Amino acid sequence: MKLVERNDVTKKPLPGRVIQLVTGQSGAVSQSDVITMGFARYSAESGPMEPHHHVEEIVYILESKDGYVRHGGFGKEPNELGQRIVLRPGMILHFPAFEWHVFEYEEGGCVDIIFYYSDPGVYTSNFKKE
Image (tube, rainbow, N blue to C red; front, side, top):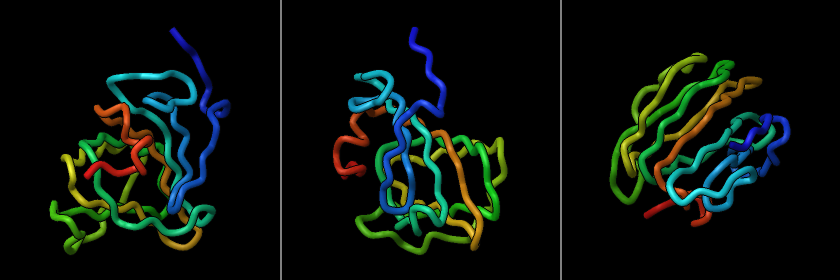
């Protein structure tokens, strides 16, 4: 068993978010051949996020201050992402493989999540699987 506190996981700034990758092919705490898990924070610190898609994902909302998600479409380009869904701590989101989605927030807001992928290489392939 490995034990770590979130505060001890390296923060990696990316466009639209700050990632703390716990496990996966390049996990800070543990290498894995079967899963990617980590934390992501969306706020003014990292700027707005662009809609994106990748392998199937489970997200648990830790914190949301005036935050929301939009989702929809499975093509090569994002279609209309639909209405805002206001996020609350404790919500669990499941994004099917390659569904477009984006986390957003109002001025002064933020969204903080735990994410899980069944693919250990999501964050070693330019953060997207095509």
